[in-house]
Length: 331
Image (tube, rainbow, N blue to C red; front, side):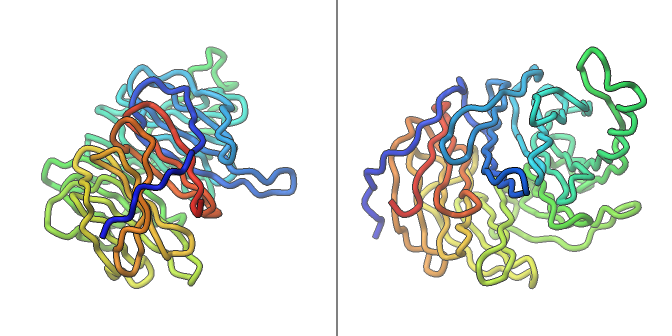
């Protein structure tokens, strides 16, 4: 039986003017600062950086001429990257907002991700090609060119380009497992795992249940029992894989679908996950049984993206209504 809709009042973060596309939390924990940030990609061309706890706006990365589909911070919080419908990927100084590097593509860019050591950047999109950029080489070129006085950013070719399939497909998401392995989700319902050392090689492939259903969202999460889990939203199902054993742990049919928008995120405890997509509600599910635990109302448009904060105390949702909402996990 579905849970009753919870009357929780979330933090509402205005600022965007069109549908959200992606959200990412980044926890920075060093000697100088302990803080959580939240970055958002949006169709309004204005990716934003916020405080991950209060939702307060910090800054906007201005420069794209098309919808921004993906925004990520590197693990240190010093760099940001954005992927856009203007056929470009940009890397920014996350402190000053300056555009450092610009990587031109030949079609819409849908996804980017920094390697854990921040030395490499993976990109993908409608070309169906996984590109790997060496950010250390970009830094050296930028220093030699005195970092482009016009502020347009240094442009470089990728160090590696990998074709996903002989058939025409496009890449929806890419995520680094470690500094050598990249997960690449595609429109053919497959998630390919590439080793990008040297010339690159395909290590193995995850098949999403029910065949060629476009993978809408995926997330890697290290959970409390020591496992590293891959959460996948595709079609009308959320599937959980154990990345260490490469086994499908569970798959649950949702009361929504992910054909046009939405996603899922696993709580750090591994005990529950959130999902949102084709309707206006955010739902919480039990990981073992798939039972709906909670249903949250508040958005005025379909849910486009959502993520748990690193500590699991809150989660953020982005909607077609142009707002981000931050919810308490156990309100």
